[in-house]
Length: 499
Image 1 (cartoon, rainbow, N blue to C red):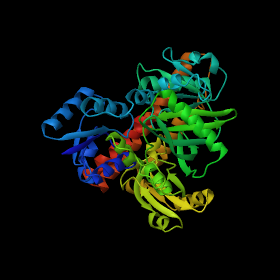
Image 2 (spheres, rainbow, N blue to C red):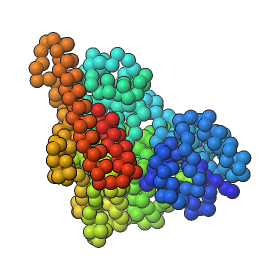
Image 3 (cartoon, rainbow, N blue to C red):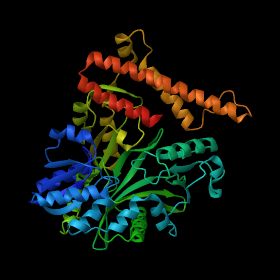
Image 4 (cartoon, one colour):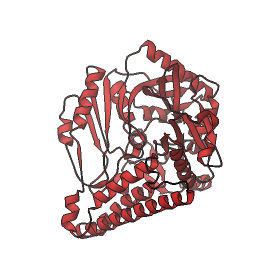
């Protein structure tokens, strides 16, 4: 039986659509997954014919799983991944067990943000950068960045904006270095200049050394605690400005030596030209494949699979339509009671699709990464502005109803409002993260300052644990044990990620 193995998948988005495309092409689909909840929700993956839980970072374990599949009589036609950070691993395995067709080394270099920076360092598209590997303190700010705030600090393995921070002070720099070093021990830290200007996302396919710029999107970025892309506008018509962008993209992709494969670039226009923010060896996630389909009539994940199978992709646009995708986030933490407005949004002029990600009982948080975008609306229009207006107006109708102070006080009147506690603590953490809280009783005595910070951190932990306990009691009163356990996992994840 002809089989395609997918290394990792999300429940929705481009990676999931690739699995559906493979099934429609007549292939037996196997998914290697590392999320136990995907096994628990097995019935929600009907397009996945076989789901195997394993460590996606252990290549020997993956090899053994593939050998077992071959012993069972499956014919491995392709091994591929559409998720971070498994594209390189999948390409290595494809070379070993079937005819690997993608440029494996280029994929590996794209996944590593430090290697990516070094590869294009001689090109005019590279921002200033430095690598910090030890002595993580404010005195370790490289000379080129000293006194030049703001700048960007990130983990070289960050995905979805999760570990990307804007630094505005030495105190904040030291705190963020400590945070990253604890989260990723013995890993270097990447420092980059902050670039101000419009940002674009470019989807690229390289087939037999020929670079195809499939789609260009102007991005809207919202900055709260992280840089989160909340809007994508397809640029269907050509212009001298976009031709200049295409030339920059082609130069960057050539520098990586990619002869076969897909990638997307986030690139910003600043005084003096174009600067690369990052490059990733896959199509963008979320609703990107759907957006390209509505705007250009191309199913990019299907064409990528065809390349992995040794077939020629069809990259010719079938149409040119103005489309815009608007993502929806929440401004505060809480347990989801219900979502309203989807039906009205679908009826809004120009709306093509409305997608709601979370279910009732899920714990939602303000965006710390792209994964905290909880809905999107895709709309078309007669012009770029018209499509944008349609999507934004429809998205404004979607409301996430979260637990409120009244809900909690009614169930437990003797307890302080848990949401108020969470919001206050989140605000405190946010201020600390951005260097706005340095101690009301600051003195020249470093030990006193450290003691003050320690007391603040301890008090924040106590408040957060109190809010979690209150929510647990309420859930046990209202919901089933299974639902309570699922929701508590979300609450604990948020607490651990924020602390």
